[in-house]
Length: 271
Length: 271
Image 1 (cartoon, one colour):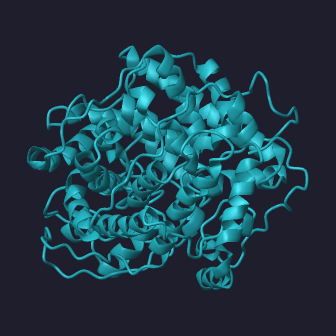
Image 2: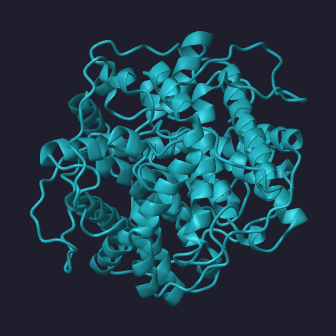
Image 3: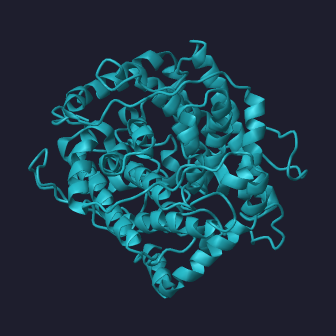
């Protein structure tokens, strides 16, 4: 299924604009009307970004992991630098509260915390400039950049980043998670390494994964800042699968992948 | 496995304090030293809370779903009211950016967005008062409250909340997700209802799920504000399973649930 998924994405490699259009159409379907009625004031969002050094950010994230775990470390590595270089809204954002992203959200093994932290960063920096129908054109970039990085994460031999000052010097294996879920990602690595969750090797591995995500995130943010970012290969999964989904259906379902009900032609109230 | 998990939790029903102690011990293991070395300034966190009306909050969340989807609607329903009743930090928090939590994070079907939004709210409101070893004693409350609500979500017949002014009037089934994952939660409901993802019934269902989570979250926050909150039955999953995990091992693994490597007695650098 992963191979099939990759193949489909390759076939759809030129369909980034199409996918972006689909997201835009979906959003425009109902948000414009609802936004007009909403009384929440226009927010100061997105937040200013100045280009950062990917390797420097990754090294910060690696060491921050030992205080804030995977999600907090990714946010801290980027927003911490932006507090110094930009200030403003970054100073009041409670970075440390996102420690709960650890262990796939409070130890539950759902989305890898480094991806949860990454998505917060992308959506705060690459968001619409104000609330209203026309500016949702920008918003899909934030969602698609997050989705790009999630796809990269599922396909990559992790961890990628090698810290300059590692907490331990042991050699560890790399593994492909085929999933954005903490449980699957760390479980596949634990099996390959034969190391328990509380081992120094596993902690070093997850700190390096967070650093790897921070590195790649800054690469894409820098491209975006230069006006050179475009989504590579990500499609909107619900359109592809008929349900919110990863690309690894057979990983849980085996050969008995359910078929979702046929999409409705009269979807009713928007969203 | 779900039954087994529930049984184990019931056996451990009186172990809330024990679990809390374990989290605290884990956190104190390394954060204190690292925090002392960290140069990130003390953050204005946690944020002030005044008691809200659960039903009123749920109704707001239900309607906000049609603009901000599951995660954004939960955050908006609570922080939107606190902007008016408290102001301060809530005014600068970019609520709308959390629209990306939709569909289990950008459509990937990972953690249900309403839980992702809920965890942000609990951790911003029920956090430590300052950064330092002694105050991490408070932090476990935030993580455990989030974990309590995730457990409640996996066990509940969802959706619970019935909106006063529903977007559609059709009767819809309720289902137990047995999982905090969007894909599993919405997939089980779609199967029971025989309705597609883009149907008005499914949207109504997810808007009601977000409203149900907001309702229960405010119930617990109000208890906490009155000094009456204590975790009911949640244990720290990594300690129970040897890996970050849900309670539904056999749901994906079938009868072939892997055994993680034995915990290390020398866990090395902390975290």
